[in-house]
Length: 182
Image (cartoon, rainbow, N blue to C red; front, side, top):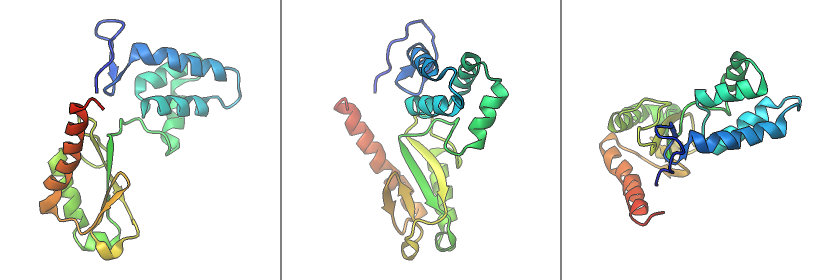
């Protein structure tokens, strides 16, 4: 992925591809469409999150100012509804099952191994935004425990000693896509 050119030197980047100078006009267009509409905040937040993948504080402040709504109200809505996130998500979401069967069969050790390999905790995203780490409670594969889901792929009978190899397969795909400009 290549970063777009900034219209101003040193303008902050959002993620890997989008910069503030590119995002603000789009957000402003969204706000203009909803200005004066009762309940505009939620669709504006949804549109902004669809655009960015998350809602950084700077965007929340901008939305607050443009809609003339106190920042505390905007932040309150974002933290109340679970569909909103203020944390950038990785390209790949890793969910470690900690339901009863997975937990008993070593799910906690698998989670610890992934956390150590990626140097992140649950709810965080790697610096390169390749992986986000979450906990799941049951993926319906208890007989195959412990289970890890990466994106929509279920990995069964995962062993902590095989985590590096499992994650490397996703890194290799990213490396190949980068080589081919995808």
